[in-house]
Amino acid sequence: MLSDSSKLWVFQSDKIISPSNQKLLINEIPPFLNDWSSHGAEIKSSFEIRYDLFLIVSVDEEINSASGCSIDKLTNFIIHLSNEIGVDFFNRLNIAYKADSEKINLQSLSDFKTLISEGKINEESIVFNNLIKTKKDYIEHWEVQLKNSWHKTLLT
Image (cartoon, rainbow, N blue to C red; front, side):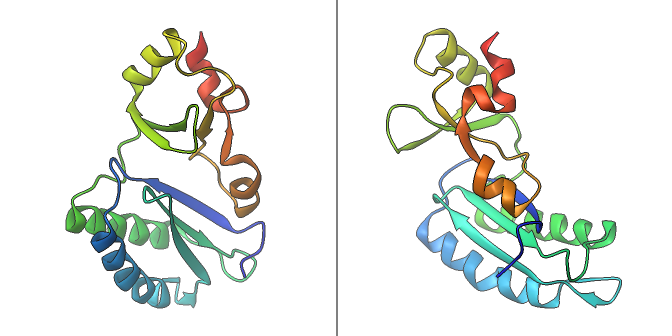
């Protein structure tokens, strides 16, 4: 189990990841993580797919830190996976949220702002704060009310 201080990256897809593509990710990611290193030192890492939309990768930095080069390798690998399964894990202009239900919605930033102005999304709506940096933040601050995230700047 990774420590609460583990470094974490959230890659949000631009669309739902199909079951067949999830299977492909589940088959391809472990070999990469098993071989992933930082300056020749093994990196203890893990991943998960959440809500058919998010790919989350974490590194236990209490053992070895991820260097700039190793983070570049991860980024290039995620780009490769994006191309392979036909999704975009790097479009930061999409907002994932829960409005009135547990169903996760995905909107462009401009459409999200429109939904706020129409009152369909409010400060109580749950949003996904993909800017989190640690496992502890992931547990405590990933799914938060809009008023408690960076998204609150969109309310004005």
